[in-house]
Length: 329
Ligand code: NAP
Ligand code: G4F
Image 1 (cartoon, rainbow, N blue to C red):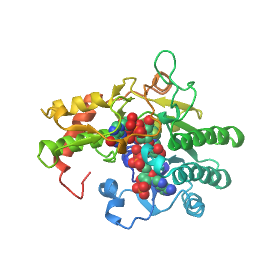
Image 2 (tube, rainbow, N blue to C red):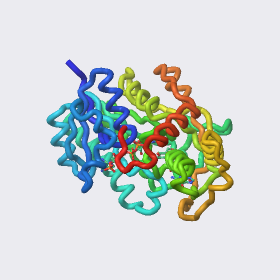
Image 3 (cartoon, rainbow, N blue to C red):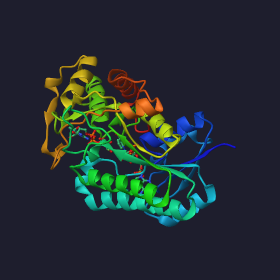
């Protein structure tokens, strides 16, 4: 019998790659999407999978929608990827972010505990939880303390603790993937990698003449979403539920990201880049660099993409799509 996977956030960057990865591994794939007034936008990242997966309307904040589906499907694996995932936006809509991410996860854990205790559950935890903390050797790892610097980060710490609590209290197979930033051509265009690549490509094509950014000095550990969804699936098929950091172990500043992209497009970035308060955050997470030795050693995970090959793929993608309203993935 095929394994059944249920994905919240299936229409997002990671959800769409995870659906593809699970289909390749012979799973039946189910997922929920929220109602959106522009239906075409909602399924953009999933159009190519239309006949292969089962999508229904559902919302983490509507526990009845979760119960109905989970009781009916009885999934072997549940991946909780749904979230208001934009850190800067979380300062603008803190109540919604915390309610959606934290109470949403609670709704899902309660549903599993009450109706489907054998379903394994993956929680999309984040390096944003580390906030101000870095170990003395310059890395963050499973033992590093959490000191989040945003409403989003605080909501994710709640979900991380909830996952461990339900694992211990109710014996659920509940795992936390502590994923560092990961990108791809499917990354939303208001995250910094996509914004820089898309705008630089538009400048090259004379459709834009400036790129306005916030903090250029913060450092991020950027990997590829395709590599990271494989790590999620490995964690769910481990012999025991546990928590794992997933990262590349390399870090670059936003400025270095811009330098790479503009050089690749043969553009002088000093002519086009400026900064605005609009894109600054009330508190910035300054530095991320992850140590993923544990998942490499225990589960044999290894990323295939380098920073350069990932950004090159994004440049190629936006080269074809920078002037389109409807993007084909
Ligand atoms: P994403 O592209 O923003 O996707 C998130 C998805 O969740 C969207 O499709 C969104 O639907 C859906 N969603 C939000 N609230 C929902 C709700 N109440 N009910 C049902 N669906 C809801 O994010 P991503 O980059 O794929 O990230 C996936 C998960 O990993 C997120 O939880 C994120 O916080 C976490 N994470 C991401 C990274 C990263 O670097 N990408 C790193 C660490 C952790 P709408 O389109 O309707 O908004
Ligand atoms: O691309 P970002 O918006 O990603 P951020 O804030 O690191 O969050 C992402 O990674 C987290 C994992 O660590 C996830 F949990 C979260 O869901 C999300 O996927 O910003 C990266 C950096 C920040 O330091 C930001 O201040 O880029 C800086 N930045 C500078 N100018 C900008 C901009 N970020 C955005 N989005 N837009 C700018 O104009």
